Amino acid sequence: MALQPENFLTGEWKRTIDDRHRITLPVEVASAVTDESGETIVTKERYGCLSLWRAADWQERQNQGVALIQQKIQSGRMEQRWSEVQRLGRLLSTRNRTVKLANRSRLLVPEGFREFLDVPSGGEVILVGAVICLEIWNPTAWIETLRDDMPDFRSMFETLSG
Image 1: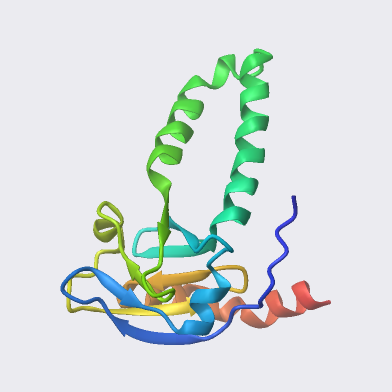
Image 2: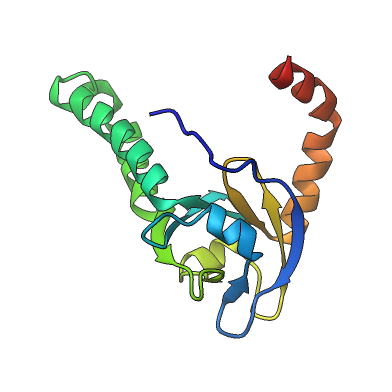
């Protein structure tokens, strides 16, 4: 399945994590990452960054990938790669969680994800539309990423749009 985003998510917003580890998302963005059942997938992307995806879309894509890996294991094609398979399994076990947004726009950051984001209660986060998902960034990690990625913007834009 090719991911077909209904919305082209762009934008940048500052938010504060409240004392109960909640972040209020802009309503229009929250609806773009919430599926018909009201579910969102929160994933660990890179240290200091979480992302939100429509649950049904994410799950279908992940299920297809897992099914391919299972076929390779069953056919004996992964015998020499057990350490990689185990590493992948550990990451799959902890990488994402299905959540429901309260009032359709407030995310309770799950335990385990709070530490990965590394922003304390009362701290600020940066929400960034990443076209196909919404990212939640630790501000320091976001600035470092911008510093690394921004010089390549023009050539990336021209390559992807050309």
